[in-house]
Length: 95
Image (tube, rainbow, N blue to C red):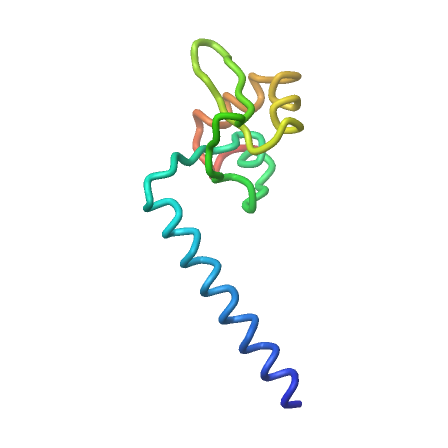
């Protein structure tokens, strides 16, 4: 029983520390991006990510979109209207 309580406490501490680290990273001045493919698919773990020079991008109708991975970039390129239209409607109306 004590092990379960200790493990639960450690998990809570890890979650709190992880969230605090994410906020500090964004506040340091690193650019963040929004992956419209993950947003459309409600993949909350990848929606917001830290942009790098190697971040995959694609152009569609004069707008540059950035992605968390090359596979999301490929999905967008196959059907850009699907994801771009969802992006213009906002996060809660994607489907």
